[in-house]
Length: 61
Ligand SMILES: [Zn+2]
Image: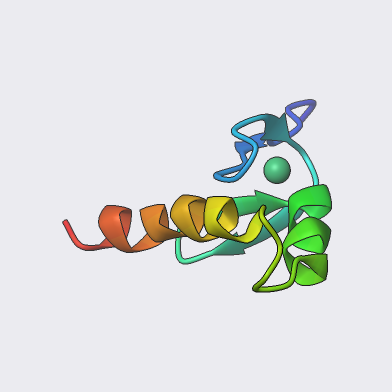
């Protein structure tokens, strides 16, 4: 029972203990907040969109 579940965040690709899981994809808390704060005109926005597209790729097999 000492195993701390670490999921790999699909955005920053780092193993994190805290975050949310959406459709088998894990997003860590810090990335979730970053996505929420990012506006469409933000230059980081395309990066997040690209990372989140993996959700569809992974779930379509
Ligand atoms: Zn992350």
